[in-house]
Length: 110
Image (cartoon, rainbow, N blue to C red; front, side):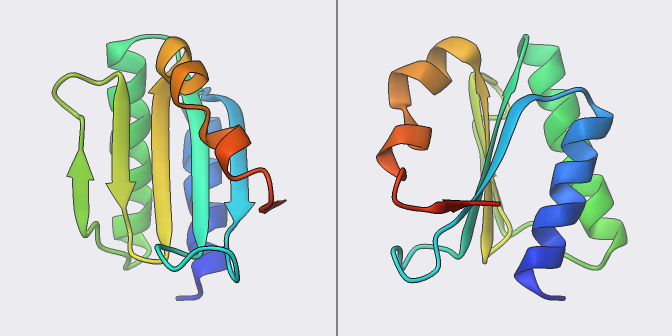
């Protein structure tokens, strides 16, 4: 499956769980880490976990396996690594503090 299709499925999953301020960034050509970042915010620990579960489940159904995840226990910043696509789920304070949106401002927003 193409990475852009993975991004679309993940975005739909996040929309289904009422994620806030969802952004997909195209990092091709400016990062050797991954091709795309998806960044979204949630309201609380349970909301962030539900968002992460939905993304993982919908991508698994589409044949995309999760390589690695971090932060699920504390759930202030959950990282889901799907290889070409990294999904960052933040509470609002952590998102503002780390500023990935600004750090990768050279990336094209999808």
